[in-house]
Image (cartoon, rainbow, N blue to C red; front, side, top):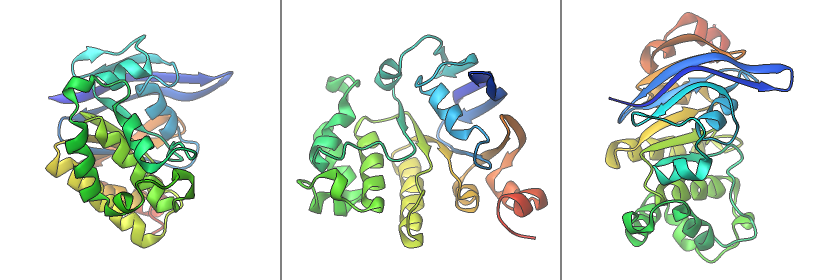
Length: 238
């Protein structure tokens, strides 16, 4: 079964067509990546899926078309977006940011205390900084907070936009290890947008290459990792 099916997605910014009929699937329980150059439309795709911007085409989540649904209603159904730039609230504490993870979710169905402890198991540094203002955290800690907050809401589909952006290599490895654990241990389906194509393809069951608003290539993550065109253009290998 597919958790997400996107068909013919089109998005315009004024006279500029950012997405030109994007179609892809995210099977339940898998990690699927969208890779591509800056400006290819990756972030726009996630925003359109999560209801942050409007577009034309069809988006089906868990068998239900999402046309006309607002972002908070999609969150309520388990489609949770951790946006580019982390999207934390810098003037709130770590704990207050985490508490916002249940906003929009049916609180009776979300086990906040249990999820909080699981988040601290994944990211022990957050527990050490629970009363600290989020804006004073390092970039890596802010990214950990963004992911932990998304997990508090018990996502069925987690949209992750550039989780490794601007992070030190050792923190990047930690973040990708955590994404794999989230997928395997918590059975969370993941749609990952990532500039670090090599790392993304390594952990992805399947991946799509987005090029100027269109899907230009697709395949298993391992196959694209060894694809000569992908190596040359996106992995910096010749």
